[in-house]
Length: 450
Image (cartoon, rainbow, N blue to C red; front, side):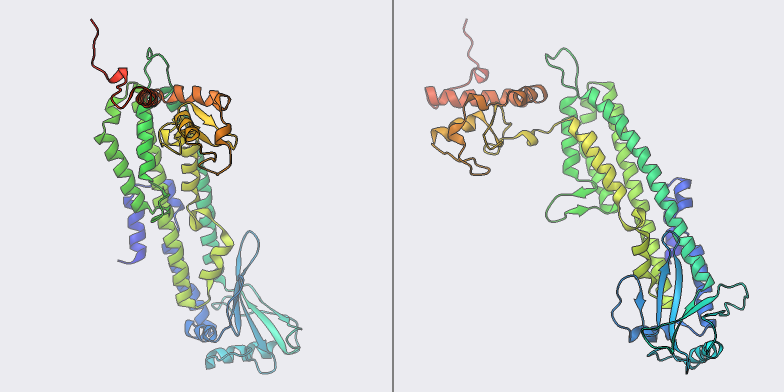
């Protein structure tokens, strides 16, 4: 299947909004212009085979100029890039410097040389038989030789080609900025909603979905839908992989019946909005990938038919996020992490580095590292002096003044279940030390005194 048909089909079947489809790379129009560019070059004797000969013997390309033996193809301008085809010729014999050309192309340059020998530095090159084509510019290159002149051939159709491509890239930039603002507003509204439904409510007299949202966000982090932090597949996901990960996340939410366990009606609405935002990011990622592919394909086709080397120079000039990177997905996912995931703290972020349980009654050592009070007591009994994280001599200096009271309140507020379990574990360990291995915590005893 030809890419042009595949591109149109993908734009139609993926359900992109009409405004997105209108802003997509105009692949068919660019292909039509490419045929005209090819014909324009052939009329000048600069067919693909001729330019390929020049590239075969060219030195290494540097910067944004393709340095062939006899020509350069580069872009001028800061905002609107105008392509120029530049030749250096010997005015005495009309030969491009160090070039091996076809007889037709040699004849073309001999004609230009005869026109300019002893004349001014500006001439008009015929362009597809039209008199309104832009003039080529010729200037003396002093550092080479007084007999070497430069001729800039401004082709009409390649200017149209890159003007159309640059204009569409600008449209994609504007579309991305607009859609990113819309997603940002949705995330901010969702942040307010989740803050309310996941608010810890001490005493148990009011309903809260804190633990359900913590479980849900834990699954979301495990899924790593758009980015992976694993060593073996670290980095951004493709849209296909992201779709699989999003499907896994939704399946786990259903399997664990998180939605059914919500106590608040607003949590159902918040979850639907959260999934909708992720589907929106996935759509943007698909749209980015297909346009990036169309952009690369058309430039590759341009070089294949002209041998001018634009595929290496033009992308470096435009610096477009929708074409050159997936920055929108990164920005929106970063915002989700800042504004949504941090609303519901995860217990892993407050774990003791020694026992890996919640850092209950957190002892902040003088080196600023945190360990739980139980592990601090064990280290002191073992006469271990150094911090397990940085090896600074601080453990034996810790006392009750090192307990972080503010963090202790925070942990009791956001992790009441985990704190209770850790309290029971600490009291059980202390009881075993005091009364022997058969000690049982009262919460685990079935004994009833009548």
